[in-house]
Amino acid sequence: MNILDMSLIEVSNLEKTYINEGVSTPALQGVSFRIEKGEFVAIMGPSGSGKSTLLHILGFLDQPTAGEYLFDGKSADEYSEEDLARIRNKRMGFVFQAFNLLPRTSILENVKLPLLYSDIPESRWRKLAQNAIEAVGLLHRIDHESSRLSGGEKQRVAIARALVLNPDVIFADEPTGNLDSKSGKVIMEILQKLHEENGHTIILITHETYTAEHAGRIITMRDGEIESDRKVEKRHEARDGFRK
Image (spheres, one colour):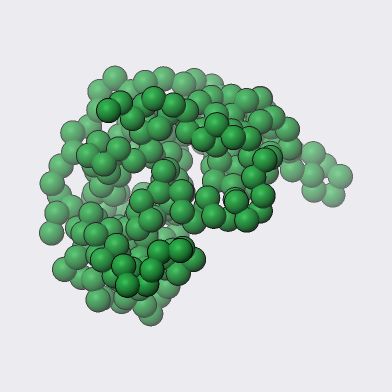
């Protein structure tokens, strides 16, 4: 079955303006694109280009000033606050630069966290969390406290937490930003493997060309506008470096 059979995300003439003490600062200006189910898209640009603002809007963490955002064929304006909260929990997974883990809590309990807000029976939580932890190669450290992990391991836990509800889309905001190059490479290979083997839709925010080139498509932003939108010709091959 072809997973690229319909648009998961479509934005049209999206704008975002911040107003502070009477001063208007445009963050997004006329942004339009579509992302199909199963795509791996990198949104790339320098600091201040609008890429993080765009991610917040796509993840229902912020609202645009103007324009239209369709998620799975339905306008964001048509979703209630309850709908948006449910979509963020069940259909979207988030991976942030700062990890956002509970410090004195095990890997298992950190990964279980999204399940607390789901309608999945508690009897299934451990198995679902184990599956997600296994996918990032950390099953052998499942009971370790997150504060005892390296930066790369913490980010792998964050990815497992994002995976635990099998979301439609994973948003990764500068996931390698706090990591050394070796750990960053492992993280990108995990994301690439999740896309290639499991068909996850992944939207990556980054300012690094090498990181972006793990995706199949790169949208480059500058000054709140799309500068280019291109397919990646040469994909990096997945490695086995993250396997335990």
